[in-house]
Amino acid sequence: MIRKRILSRKFNRRQFLKSTAAVGVLASTLSSRHAFVGFAQSDMPSELLDAVAGESGELNIFNWSDYIDEDTVPQFEEEFGITVNYSTYEDNEELLAAVKADPGAFDLAVPTQDMMFRMRTQGLIQTLNTAWLTNTINLSAQFLKPEWDPNNEYFIPWQWGTTGLAYNSALIDDPRTAGWQLLFDGASDFSGRITMLNEKEELISSPLKFLGLSLNTDDLGEIGQTRDILLNQKPHVSAYLGAEVKPLLITEDVWAAHLWSGDTFQAQCPDEGGNENLEYVIPEQGAELWVDGQVLLTDAPNPATAQLWMNFSMRPSVNAQLTNYVFYATPNQASLDQNLVDEELVSNPSVFPTQDILDRLEFQLERTSEEARQLMCDIELDIKS
Ligand code: N2P
Image 1 (cartoon, rainbow, N blue to C red):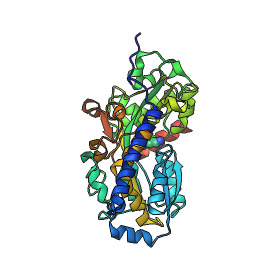
Image 2 (image 1 turned 120 degrees about the vertical axis):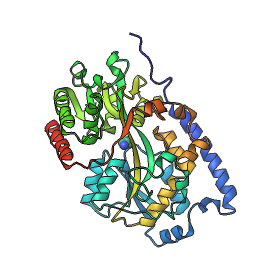
Image 3 (image 1 turned 180 degrees about the horizontal axis):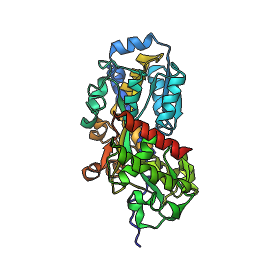
Image 4 (image 1 turned 30 degrees about the horizontal axis):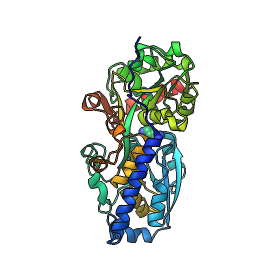
């Protein structure tokens, strides 16, 4: 069969670094020019800076692994004289457990929109001071007043993306790569060579989509059908994990993975020893669309400094730099309008899905049915035990 490339060419980190450096030059020219008139901090209200001055001078950030470019923290530290302690997690459950186990260890974290609901219900996050967050005006319309945060008072979007299928096109030449059938119908053909994401919301969403169902269904019969699919697949799954699959995809120990868009492109990146045979597919049956956002933890020791960071992250140049490095999509419309995001990313529908693709995608919302939630926990237990 003729193998159709999903990506016209592979992302190239060197090229991104070049464009990032160019942005850096522009930004520093601007800030030194405007520093004269106080530009560098003009987007930070003086009440915010005063509140920051009364805090410890440190900031404790808890974020997903491989989700920031290497210059962002040093830039913030240098501009504001803050020391950042940066820790990472691999999925939302790990984040939740860590925040509960050690309240006060972190100032801010970056859950996915559906985990934000859970954290809010459990009293783990607090409202933001929206008057301090002047750069919210830079956000794209779809992230202003979203269903999960109608007043933009809890959740400052960081990056967004999709959860789909990563596979090695040199090892798998199979029409089932068009969708979820590769990981389910094809599981026995690639036994021991496939991995699935660990978190139950993502794990159960994939067979729901494979069945043509909504990933937000509360119907117990529909959710129940995923149990058999996942149990049949289980003997062939080598692990349930997230970003840690990247080195295994690169070495070709794993041939196909249930994975997020940007992490797949990172594993593919030739300048970092990536594997250029990797492809990313948004399955034809549809998939999950998500946004990860920054939340202020209830026991944050430095709440003003955390909001200084959030406002900084919404500067067009800062958010574009993240996207250019991590290969996820920016929620910052001003970054796009100012052409700060590399064209190769903007024009790639696997990174910024076009409307016809978006029509097949769904955000995971709060599951209100207690029975449905319980059933998902039972299924997870069956799969993981
Ligand atoms: C970053 C993964 C974030 C994607 N490595 C999950 N929302």
